[in-house]
Image 1 (cartoon, rainbow, N blue to C red):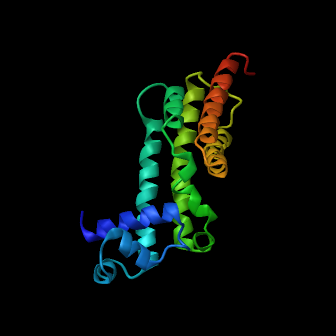
Image 2 (cartoon, rainbow, N blue to C red; image 1 turned 30 degrees about the horizontal axis):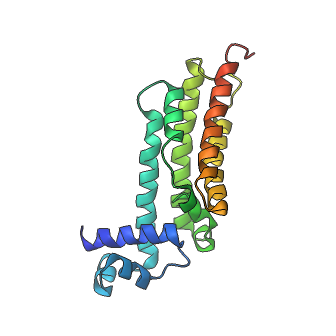
Length: 192
């Protein structure tokens, strides 16, 4: 791994652990095991490095949500995506950035976060629309609303797990989301 990748990876981890406001360039260089010369050879400063690191993390989130486009029926894909192991007590790598006051007030950083969620929500909406089209979910469901509900359940699972300091609330939130999808499926046919 080259020094640029080391710096980007270190920043991504520190953003997840501490947030943007609490991470200094010195922290990043220490975690990456590189000197100041390498840092400023590759990046103009903390902000540029954070944008690159957060963009990489957002790309990983997008990669995970590609399961919504994968093999199997739309409902199976949605359940498979929900059941990805998630370290609840560590929080969502992208969602946690919405709690950092410096990220929220930085147009470039918050745009990376918003775009990551938009891409994930678009995939949810497409999968939900497909599930409705093949009769797995009732036609009364509004895909955009259900997509945001499922995203909120996952984000809420992270918050509850962090508040309790244990994985259980995250796992319960995921089981609840899967149960909601199963319950919605059982309504198909009674939908008017």
